[in-house]
Length: 377
Image 1: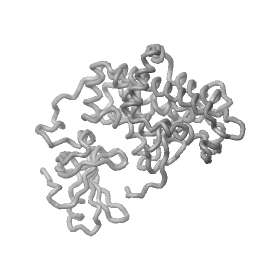
Image 2: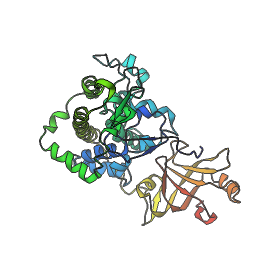
Image 3: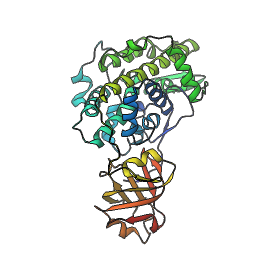
Image 4: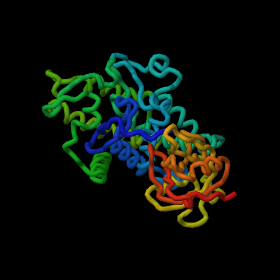
């Protein structure tokens, strides 16, 4: 567990000025703005039961915010990177799981797997929470054409094009550069999508399988994305068609995400006021911390593991061992006199007070004073 500076930034599918840091594979990263829109479209179609179940599982965090988690953890959980895309050859006319998704390690296999986990009453709560977070994100990825097609060019990353008089690559163009001049705020873009939704048969989008949904994007890659105009210049006609297809993809993704969650959570029973719930304002369990980012608060939980990095920073991991922890208390001063004491807290129930912030998609409090960490046993 190390603190690293961002190594690159990636633009989004639809809008500019939305930045993702430290991607492991740029060709597999979709953008914040689009994922939030997909989640917001989905939320508008949740049943009341699903809305309550999602609120319970996410500990109060909004689906839009939670939809970003799967990208944020990729630098810590590198094994999840293949789950964001599937390399169906552009020339293929069908999906072949042996060829395209070995061992189920692709976005199609992941969506199928996480649906089963989320729907399973016997699955541990922590696994159902993680399954929900992945589904909120991956169903968006599934609808980006260059996440489901490959022309031996890493989903367009190795295909150079020109856009607006400058060079770029095809994947980045589809990720957002084609319409970065729109600069439409999120509420306005959501309203734009809802106006179009009012003209569509949304129920028809709910039908079909995950494979069929992926092949829709693959067909767009064949019919439009890879049909680059002469001179490799993406002209206004190409851009206009791409924007229209992107908007429709966001709508379909949101409608289908809602359908998936409505089905998977049909029998879900909220946890209620269990022992892990806070009993007064400003005090939260480690599982609830992610729903209170930006707050000065107290987080209570059991330290599952303590890790000291090569640079001497100390991390208390709650809920599960790194990198699946629900919350972290981080001492980023290797010379702090309390560093040795923190190592002794493994297995103990403690409370940590401070500003809850996000680091790589996980909530944490940075320890600056010894009084912030108090053992409860």
